Length: 419
Image (cartoon, helix red, strand yellow):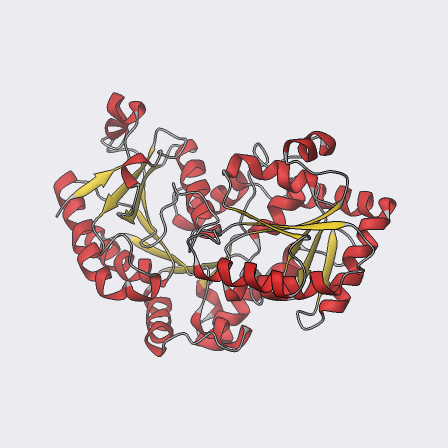
């Protein structure tokens, strides 16, 4: 077994020594298929990566030693460590680096053995193992047993919810069974919203006493309002109204629906739809959607920006008149919160955890996903009502200010029993 740890000057100067402190509480975060050091927006790299990275950084800042276990992937040696010296990312063999997510289940067992071997070799014991996604939880359960540690599971998405969210989401039965088994064995199962708690209790029969809500957070040092005019100049915009989508490009995210919304817009209104994420040159779904945009006569309206560095997203949010989240399902909707932290109003589908973040008529709008015409009307209303846009923006900033990653990390410490 080989392991590759992301390296930096800080690690060489003694990152591992901070983990040798026997009095320091230790937490293992398992993120099997999704490395937190990777930038969101390509393939399956999205909000969960951000979640794990930010949680690791904030726990490290609170004095917790954090090991993040993830599978090796292309470019793993070049990935940077998270920001805190108490945190390290450990890449271990877990199947071919280019394997698709749907093909990864057989590789969980060898990855788990590699995690246990790393633990035995390093002599580290963990107080808590926190798994992210159902595949990670299969490995996390074994590590928790080995360390005699609490096992906390956060699923991020659930098979039974996805099946009900959109026709064609054919999640395998073995995933649903595994999720139920994990829920019955974990010490705690966490959810980002009360809606997710309801879904787990009703669809999986889990006792609500073992389900805890700990909301996501937003990094307000990175996501904050920029000067809109300067942001627009940096992005090459020329005064047109701008609707923005940020996220993965996959069917559940509703980008095809977003193109139909754009097709319903008033043709006399100059506007641009910017789609940030994915890569039409290398990924089939963005390529299919780019071809669809041409067929719909939107080639002059829609710009497939592709994947961009995370530190530039505040410019996109600040330059946009409105951020659109057209998903068929979101357990939370982190992009909506990041947009709000930059002062961008959000128009979103009324699904999943989005109503917990987007308050209809206050910081944005929630609409049925079957009604592209209503979305188009709402976008045009925001485009041309400056007073409304300013009011929504002000409320959006207040929403984001109340939801920090520091607060979320403190809640997790309480749940872990480490306070």
